[in-house]
Length: 399
Image (cartoon, rainbow, N blue to C red; front, side, top):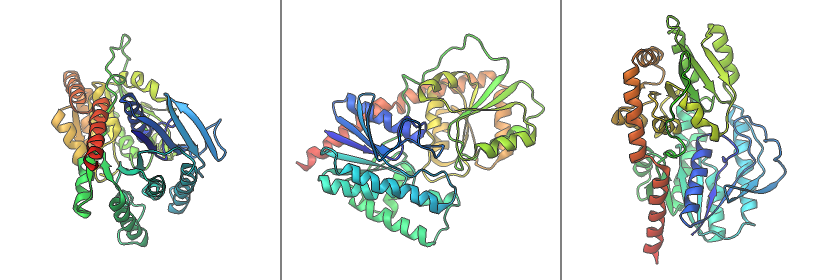
């Protein structure tokens, strides 16, 4: 089948949706599908178009997959209006560019942003293609949970109405967590759903023996420094561990909260904390292999949110301190691959770190458990194969 992935986020940007969707594109292509990508000029998370990109339209090939890039007005503002302007700039430009693309059998649109579903749906109608709406975070629910909009507000009501319309028009609604799909089914009965689970490339993210162990134990966070991650609670927890001198904490990445976090660490006198620049995906396995503990935090529990970093930590056989609840917590508890703390529980985060820093055998055992679970349940190649079979079965049933 000819499949178009329609997403605002894609490599060379670094981030969870970028990694997940690029892996999905490669896996589907390897299964014999003709895959292309319609995406924005790379700008995330800095809010600036990457060097070498720009203009209205650009076409390139990444990993053998045609990538069509459309104009976007980037923004990293925390204010709602600039973010909406940025979202809708790509909604419009991707629709216009999509009009000139070859015909596809399936168009898969990634949400968030929810608004991108507007152009995804219109493109599917124009192309007479089956439309798949892939939900990685529920909006506007997540916006309410992050305090960006108020429940009952005009923006919230518009979001709910748009959700209802788009879900009803999709040939298939996919979600990266069971909680997301359960929420959609409860609110909008009759929607055709499929669990397109998140996961990890278990061949790329695999444990490596360190021939030169670090002098100090390393706690690493690698990823976006944004509002949803709540990294300030991690810094506050580290401040409670001043009596320990045999560990260091590395924050690797970038984002709108990074300068604020850097200032906070300096004001608290956290000499064991270092902030490093973001690294390309290809270098992340080597970076994660140098960790003794990986921390995966959320500021608040977003409905259905399961951070991609959790699967990568599991695949790397590293013990996890997960700051989350719901489905993500259940994954860690079932696999016995780490410790779970509620978002906002600073002393709980500190206690979890202290325990793992002082119990080497538990770190080893938890890491090994995570690797087993990643191989058995969260291998992206197997997830893509199952998805491909499901799509082919659905198409066959319609004939």
